[in-house]
Image (cartoon, rainbow, N blue to C red):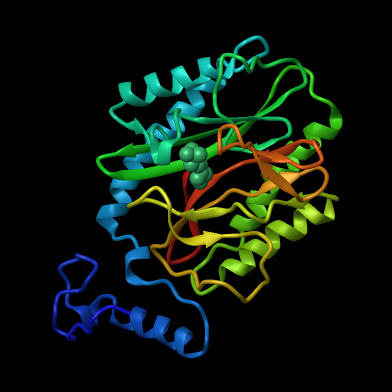
Length: 291
Ligand code: MF3
Ligand code: CO
């Protein structure tokens, strides 16, 4: 908890209202969960109305870019072409790709094919072919506000096994979303995602997960999917994070490409699928910010 605010001081959220008429009861409720031993968000994880409006502007671009590239993704194109389209569409709309030069990442998108789990680096050498499954992960920064989401694409005629994996990975995200509500826990989300994948015989990558997002590209909390109901951080209105489980058809283990330091692959070489949404916890449940 940050420093104490007087009841009649202006609220920390920037609403201009007195603290007692704004977030005081909310802060006290959170303090009650903390006293009961739960992990609770700190104030900087709670987005103000002004920040949410800006993040939505960023997400408008992110969604539009994913919509735009969907029209061009087909067998025969290479992933560098996708990267170029992402850069051009994003900048044309006034945003900038958040991954470009992020901690040395060289491209405007992540493009992960088949047994690549995530952080596939676009390349002219990677030509999409019939039967591939592809994740395109896009993130946008606009005026310092961030959005992040990803979708799967099936290239031409995809085997029923891979198609099923892609569908279940998507459903996993929606199972998780059903659990997003104030005064629930991130473990509720994690377990729902996990149980759904496991019921279909799949595994969920342990080492990489979702994250807070909005004011920064990657904020706390970390959002894992091997967590238990009633544990992990308390969700409160104004929190924003991604749900982005990587669902493996086979074993859970992954490794990182030593040559580029980024791309994760399944250890057993079997396919992996991922969808990512950016979600806001509202007073009554959730709102999808980017998809
Ligand atoms: N959009 C990815 C995520 O979900 C970005 C990973 S960082 C990168 O967090 F540099 F690899 F792109
Ligand atoms: Co993300």
